Length: 212
Image (cartoon, rainbow, N blue to C red; front, side, top):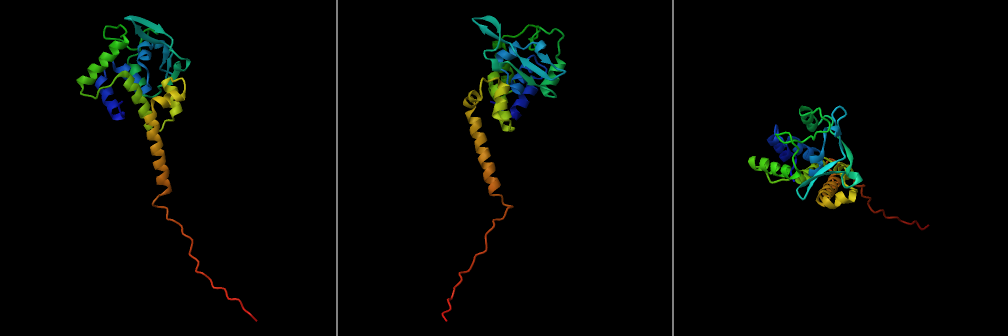
């Protein structure tokens, strides 16, 4: 997956192309390829800054299939208010609410496999590390985790059925978070500006018993 710096380079490389929105939907929101291909303008509310994921578009045996997401948790509302993605969508806004958000240069909706090939072309052309749209989804999760976003919120954004699914997929993120947490606690306890307090030592006292 990409870090935030590599994501910025990819965003710049795809700017103005037909793949720009697809790349930002994956990198900024963690959408699946089928969710990107199935997003229509009626599911985008730019005034409210909301995108609703409620339909996917896939290929089965070379035939296009439009259907509901496979789980209820995959149907979700995602906020984009004030984001780079919102500004890009505003520039590409369409009046036909039934039209797909991501289109090819000829105005037709791309197949999921077309999106994969188009991303591969941009990555190669700009000498970037190999990445897929699903890899950009992982990149979203990784960057969110590095910014301190709770795993529960990352899980909801990704549309996972439970946080256990997220934790199983991103075990390495949990390991990194746990390591940073332990280091932070250790540093707080051993802070150099906090002198150690030592109680004054008491000299032994010899008690004499008076015998009268």
